[in-house]
Length: 166
Figure 1 (spheres, rainbow, N blue to C red):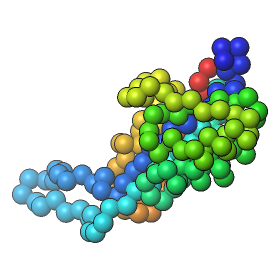
Figure 2 (cartoon, rainbow, N blue to C red):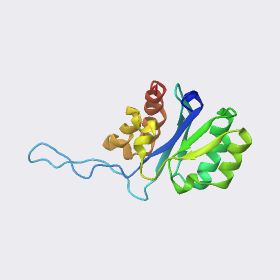
Figure 3 (tube, rainbow, N blue to C red):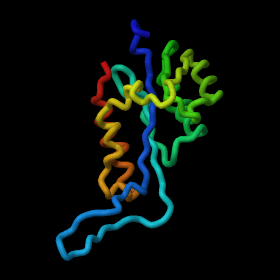
């Protein structure tokens, strides 16, 4: 792979939830701090993408958490069509990534899947992208549903498109 780094596709996901609201704040002395926060069950949006040496590949935003069924759909509908025979997909060691269906799809494409060692996000160049790290630093208003899709789908994608590995 050292001679053909363009064949590597690192995939990873990150998520934001509606419960990312600050619980405390500041206001002028003698005045009460008032802010809006939704009530009810929390929701999540997951952003997953593949990172090649020269581009962001197959970005996808999912309404909900990542699980095996969602990962299977992502590989089948988003990532697999972008792969060439001989590509190597590298994923973290998450149980939802270890699917026989995913192995079959990648094998039929002429690609193969490798897993990073457990607890080693520093080996995945996706996490070195500044935009990826900034997802956890959303403003307090990020708890509101419309405000979640915009940072993930627009700002994160724009910053990731400008990120280069090599």
